[in-house]
Length: 213
Image (cartoon, rainbow, N blue to C red; front, top):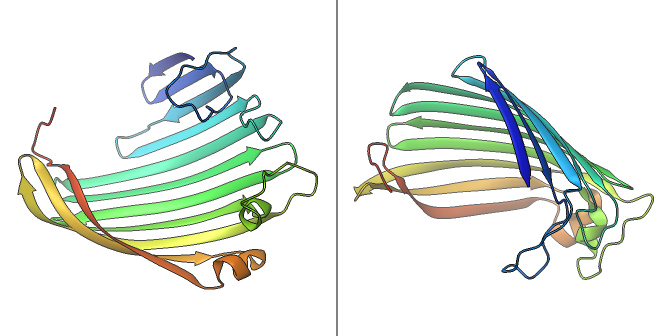
């Protein structure tokens, strides 16, 4: 991979040239090849609270089992408000689009987190399209073809985390969330019509006042 960049004031530009093929099942070897793909990104940070980025890339034959190039485009806007160390609000919106030989996939994301003291509330909304045939027949190798089935799927996540201990420079918290899913009609008999899921977890992260190496 070769990466170039320039940064001046609120504007930054990056460009990369790389091998577009995804790695195979052998994860411990080094894979070499021609730099046949590229990507470019523009960052704009007008104030410390706002960050905007736009990127586009061309990947040459990224999937071993799915012939064809892919063009991927995405953009995002982030906003951060920090009244003090214990009161922080962050919001991000993003959109993405992948153009394949026989299908075009897109996605929309909106997420927000608000921390007040030891309590954090967060939410996330996702709206994206999927290649329905891959989920209908997961045991069959998917071969791209004209007229592929592409359907929208949505998910809404609402959750909370409560920090309850601090130990050796780390903060420990417990959290839970619930996710509401909306699946396309073709997948209702395999995935359900009204899908709900939930998570209960423990979070360990460096303390805001600690310097962890």
